[in-house]
Amino acid sequence: MSRTSEPIFNVPAIVLAIIGICVLVLAGEEFLLSSEEDITFLYYFAFVPARYDSSLRLVGNFPGGTGADIWTFVTYAFIHGDTLHLGMNSVWFLPFGSAVARRFGTLRVIGFFVATAAAGALAHLVTHWGELMPMIGASAAVSGFMAGAIRFAFQRGGPLAMFRSEDPAAYLVPAAPLSAALRDPRILIFLLAWFGLNLLFGVGSVGVPGGEQSIAWQAHIGGFVAGLLLFRLFDPVPSQPAGAAQD
Picture 1: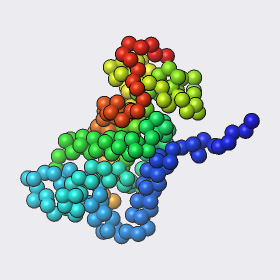
Picture 2 (picture 1 turned 90 degrees about the vertical axis):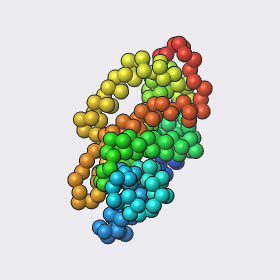
Picture 3 (picture 1 turned 180 degrees about the vertical axis):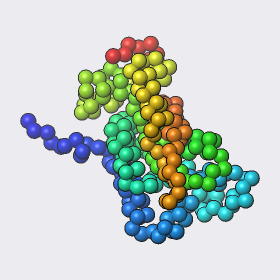
Picture 4 (picture 1 turned 135 degrees about the horizontal axis):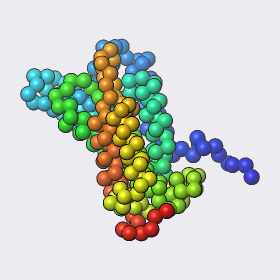
């Protein structure tokens, strides 16, 4: 019997919506804004650590005022430097974001995206205090969804068990407690590979057009750690009892 739908149409709508917003933002920057307007746009919506350093004379002169001090903890994640930057984040967000979305549902995905993006911005703020270069890109949030996915993907009956990725029930298996997950050799290998590759290469943020490019790897780590730690707060599926057998 033929399948009723192709895999691309099984991507949760919220995942496509988040990517679609990023595409629209990038297109708007490219086709609607001049270079000067684009820089102003970035200082309205990108994350700028210098906003929060009271020792700088520039504090208070940034566009957006107090509102931007708050919303840029999240809005920066929808801005990308170019199509390659957006494409790389989208490639990673499609599988991991979809896995988490099938488990969480739309509202929890939005909350999880906000929380992990904000955690990434906070990590960047702490490690780049007073820096004027804006940070942009969804990498911190994508990292958070990666962390969230590994909390259940390796469990018995999960998406990676016997490649059951097309079974809806595979996304609703109980997640192991974090302490147990961190003792799973498969998850440890994933963590070592992710942290190693992130530190070496990164999939990162880009500064103001024409400025020096940099990779905000600290933000990635902040988002990833937040995804690991906050997963339980968003997860609607009862957790696996401590000490329960794992596949």
